[in-house]
Image (cartoon, rainbow, N blue to C red; front, top):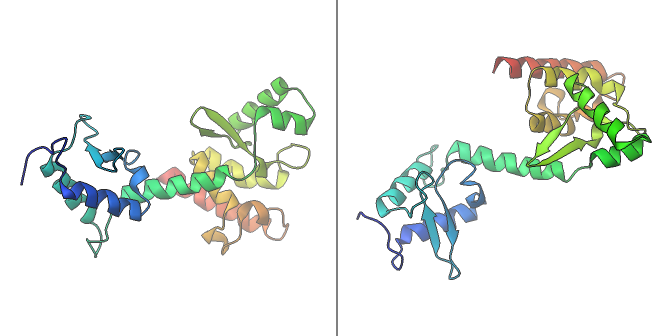
Length: 218
């Protein structure tokens, strides 16, 4: 069967694909992965759109999309494109990270006991010198709180851990995730926590340098 899906007659495959992707929790990440995506009408009908043209997808296009989506791994009926899984995983990690403490210029200025302008200068100078991690979320700037002490100064024990990653050009989100989550290179320890232990700090620094080299070579 070929041709475009009409406005009133929708290929059953449109429903099957939408329901399948929703069951996997991946439907909301299609557009970010550069794949065709859909919106459901008020009656629940999924309307698939070609991202290149913005037009409704034809039956042929839907079947080609299904073949591409399922043609992954050893079990095609369960397979999904790797880039879609990566986008979904990245979105989940970012959601988890943004739920952890972070500062605005104003909150960090209050912690440091100085003006917002002085804090803004401090933050950007530190970022330029690879001493402060900044993360952008759309139009918003996040300053992860884990990197500061109780007075709002950069944690000295993190200098030799954070700086190599930033100098290597590691994505800020990935740096934030690695520093604050269990790290395989450290046997599951959290780098930002382990760095505070004088006995563990050299191991954390070594792991950061190894990771930085792999980032620089990528």
